Image (cartoon, rainbow, N blue to C red; front, side, top):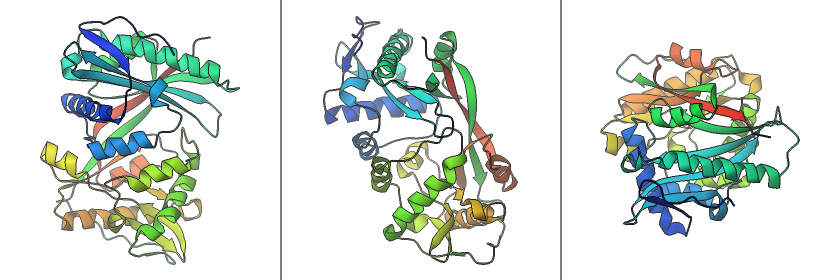
Length: 331
């Protein structure tokens, strides 16, 4: 591992200790998201589930935490990586969050240095024949983070959008194609739904095959509720799905009523027949009946199957943008 730098701006860096650190990570993450006006409030249960099911990330070697001299955690960063199936491009990802109380001290820059050095070590320890890029994701509100990355030579390569749709607007009644039916789903359907979603996303930018660990993390997610899913079946097979959820912590914290129409996917043989539109419309109607005020989702704006214009056609509008940024791995 790279050595840790000397304290900077009254903040010293240290390695991960044990799961008691999760509460510190949560406080940093939520404070940073709120300060930057970004959705995605997490809970201790949620972050614990995520960090117990990481892939290509060893917390003992790949996570650092920044603390003030009075032991207040104000920043954390970790690294991971994946290989895109179609191109065999390896993305070496640095994840970094700085609490508002830790900003303006040079902490983010020092941690980014360490994260990039650790990723270079991983690239050396695990040789890869394809192209390799240092990668980061930034949201529209993270101006300081993006400026740091741009100064290091990173460029925007992919754009993602958060979109919302008021449920007070008219919701269309859209039929499913003949031969498909929506039925109530339970945890007995979870494996089939998961595998169908993984198949459907194989032609998307950045796709990497999901693992059993990924499934276990998804299965244990606190907001994963099969009673909210809208799944179209062709006989016993999954044709399309919208895996709806409500982030109660986010709604309570931000004082809003959003329902997420997420994990929208259609199997190739059923595409361009109105399956996604019909399932999304059913989902919006369900959320309206639950008392939600907006439907929300995230989308890759250049999705190869036309998801972005499809959502616009259903009344969704962009509320925030985010970007994947990258630069070639030096050497």
